[in-house]
Length: 282
Image (tube, rainbow, N blue to C red; front, side, top):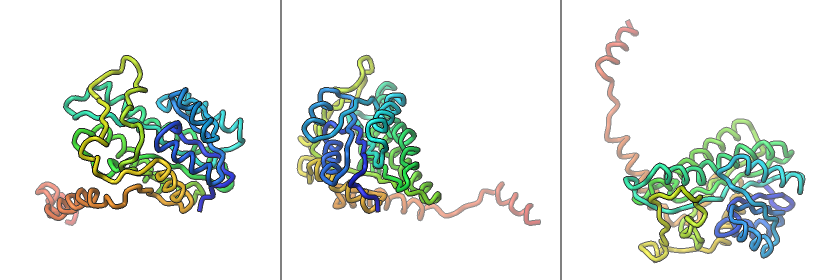
């Protein structure tokens, strides 16, 4: 089990939404928390409100993430928990996307996590008692939706990175553990993601408030609820932290389709391969 009390934790995207909820719960459980965000005004306000240290970061820039790590270690001496939470979620159909859309989404949602892991993992590995990394994916990490294809590409990537890293850490007997947070409908300001899109990188992506659409009738939770789910996963070294386990039917539908595809097609050997096999046997 990973202890939280007494640890130094860094939460990217910590000025609002799920990141803020995670930071608040980490503080409640005894951690010293650094929140990092690209939006300076929100960062300063949240840091003052919740009792965290605010450090500006642009997760798309590896030098900025390295500076975040260096300043955290300089101030507090170590890092024991990293939450790669910064992300954006505007939507567009794949046929309408421009390369600028793809680049921005991937830079924030996937490269941001890659930069965090690459920079902070060596620091956690130096700790005698290891530490914990939480990467924020999505229910879209398991089942994509029409209109959110690019977003799902990034979140599938976060899931693959997290699962592979977990296997490698286990193989090494490392005291560092990793969790994939897969949130469902949480009350955040992700519906205004474009506010932080760099000038000159405009494209087809649009902010969508899904709380006013078909998802309005779904079960919505507050960020602090997501924070409690995350800290529980950290304490138990769980690979997956799910805010909506009642949504299994969404994931099950995709898994069933994959299983049926495996069952539909028999194992076949082409004539050329069969001849080669026969020749090898002779």
